[in-house]
Length: 195
Image 1 (cartoon, rainbow, N blue to C red):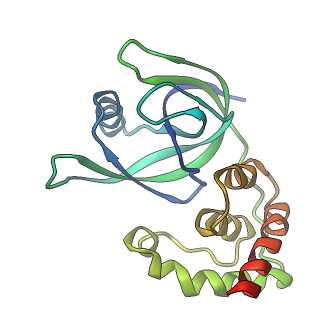
Image 2: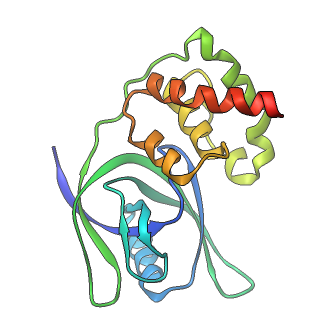
């Protein structure tokens, strides 16, 4: 499999393939990253922080998602607003920190998940998503929808359900859409019972 180097953006969030990622950028190292990605029309890697924080040193999980910038604006507060969208997942082979503080990773693109039609037993999940996605703001309103695809439905549910970041990371690392839906089913059942 192809290996390549990308700038990394360690965050306290999990980005899923096809999902939106709104960012407000103020650190010089990330302004440079955004500028480079816009100029080269390239991607950057988003990975969940395992230990540390977003503004300092951080160790990250080994599976993340490539992100492509789809929109940007200068905020009234002077901060750069960026909207990125998740593409393929990657496996982190090694990472290092450059002098300017930017994290770089040597990564391997992970194979895309198999396209599987949403099984009938999970059809209610598609309806649930249709009911809530458009209420989640402009980032989801503009998102291409694929309610019949098991991977797409599982990724969107993993993003929006009130589960821990570790649970979201677990869902990201699963490579079988049906296993992901099965892992999310108890959470949905519990929410429906308590809601």
